[in-house]
Length: 270
Image (cartoon, rainbow, N blue to C red; front, top):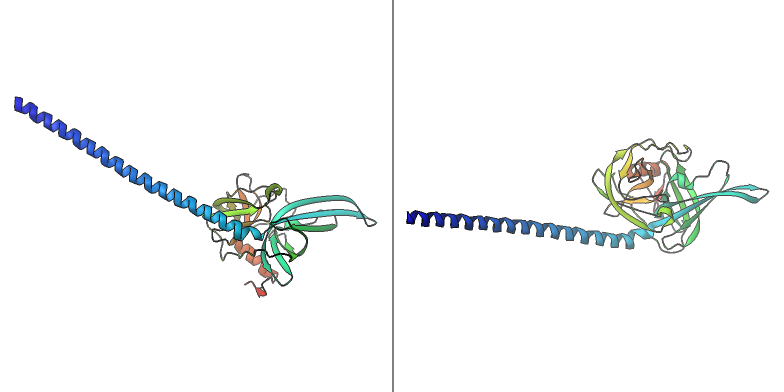
């Protein structure tokens, strides 16, 4: 009987020891998994910091703010004025000018206001006069030129549209703030529903990029780029859900520029 008790005691002790070993092994596995997760998170954070720095140095100098002023005049005297503000991105240059891609509704005249002027501010808030080269409400896109005065950045277009889940960055001037950078991803493609839009300014009837990079009034015409710092879209307007933005996709941008025989550094876009 005494031997049986000893045997039972030893078996119980062994089971407890094995249980403890199992707990230790489980804890060690969980610690390894947690460490791997923390290291991956740190690497992702480091990558985002580096991307933010690269964008600040290489991309933001291509960002511009556009003010459009519309006037009524009588006998050469201005007696009424309306205006608006948007964003744009430099996509090309020649020996004298930079060429900015923006929205048609950013630079359009208002009904009853025949005189229109455009002011462009670069990323350092240097001001100059802008001139519309061509525009199209069916794309809600426009190209504006302004005279060179300092060296600014020029951004390339991506070769194809981003797909659902791709990470994107919006850069612009929401509410007049300067060079605001926000991160997000492509949610989907949807047809815009802009019941308040003037068809002479914006009559887009193709699917646009729905993304969750924060945008606000003033982002219109601003760039949407990928993590390779290429333009994948031009922010156009918000969605019915204000947490999302809509952007004209790059393949439509390419079609718009090709229709108007636009030259990139003296080379026609195909």
